[in-house]
Image (cartoon, rainbow, N blue to C red; front, side):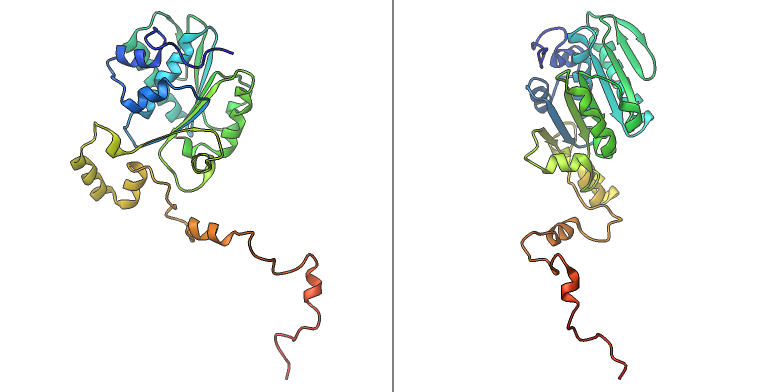
Length: 266
């Protein structure tokens, strides 16, 4: 199995690639890019640097070995294409030793035959690959079926998976993976207040103009009920308990005998 993390300071190291591109990593970015993990969730505010860090990881994976495959998923083609643009910009500014062979809106192929492919996050489009790295952008909005379809493609390669997003309600695989601490994930949360490029004045203006619900979602990274829910998630979960006896036995007909009628003709 190949090394999980490139040697820091090498031409292919993600932190070095960012620095060579003039992007000094934030502490959380450096910690993520130099840690040994298999699956990571980035619950990070908008414009906090999660795309840049993930793009650096994608480029590192493509550069560090021959014939590696990086897949980028997003809910829509436009979003996966924009993510690939971030990778392309990082490659251009970092100017690594490995040359670029071919490129298109949705694909990059390096001279070492490694590829970075952008796909819309739909189950039918992600099957049939064996990947060394899968990146799910706007992961909270990638369908569960698409996420499940990515899991087998990492089984043989020993590859890694990264999901980056702001929350999208208390539902879906991203929420479940973040909440369920029995699942083995590297979890990173970066709010707007954790980002050195966002001032308190800016954040307060955003809160006043976009409203509390949107602000808590986009900048505080809180998993909230969606606005169209009839019942709160916490109330629904509180109603689901195994600590009470069932209302009926296994044979409900036993409870229907010798009962007074609800209505009478008298």
